[in-house]
Image 1 (cartoon, helix red, strand yellow):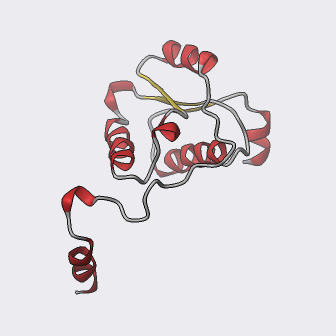
Image 2 (cartoon, rainbow, N blue to C red; image 1 turned 30 degrees about the vertical axis):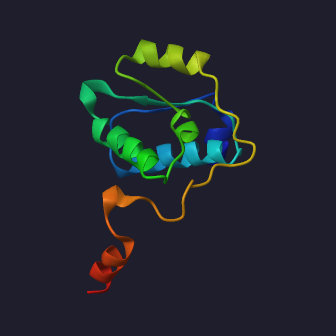
Length: 121
């Protein structure tokens, strides 16, 4: 993995399974940690990754992800558009690393004590 990452100029995830998801998450995390500053693209043909993109939006809304971290990922339905986006993307400055904005997310109005009680039972 390390050699592949070193030799790559960018990363593109095609529709796939667990391994694809893991590899994409890893290179995004490496950008967050300043291990590399290479663009990451997601080819979203036939809306394959729509649920993952909705999860990322929810993670941002709930405070688990910053809007800056969402800018790491270029998304397009067309391969040529994705290549263009990767070639022109301005990666965010992550020199101070990204962290959650809150320790306890808002959880869509739920009471945290109530949630904790549910987990224990």
